[in-house]
Length: 148
Image 1: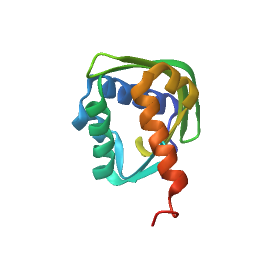
Image 2 (image 1 turned 180 degrees about the vertical axis):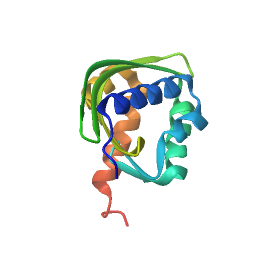
Image 3 (image 1 turned 90 degrees about the vertical axis):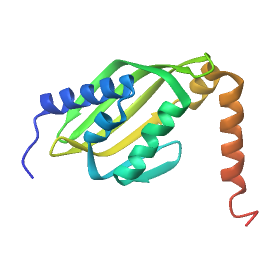
């Protein structure tokens, strides 16, 4: 595999953010390697088909998403970003939270995407519905194995 340019990795990552903000699922998926992995909220999605489900999940939950970079670093094939996400749910409620992501690139395609949330910040910003969703997920994970 040829060495990748840090400047080009940064450019590709910013173009991916723009496609996510526009809700352009087809364009978003073009940024991902066919064997990609996405990790978020304790889940691991593998392959472009599951990446497509993640993009659909985003648009199914949010009518608008906007990213504001805070810190960006590129090292080798890895892109690190701390950013603020402002999003609007379909019912009009809004959420604003700081997140971090690590993108690992192969031939300028996303091989791995790992998203990290400050859960307390996210829950406080998102209101009652998000808190209930997250609490239900936490309880479900805690009870896994006990109810099977």
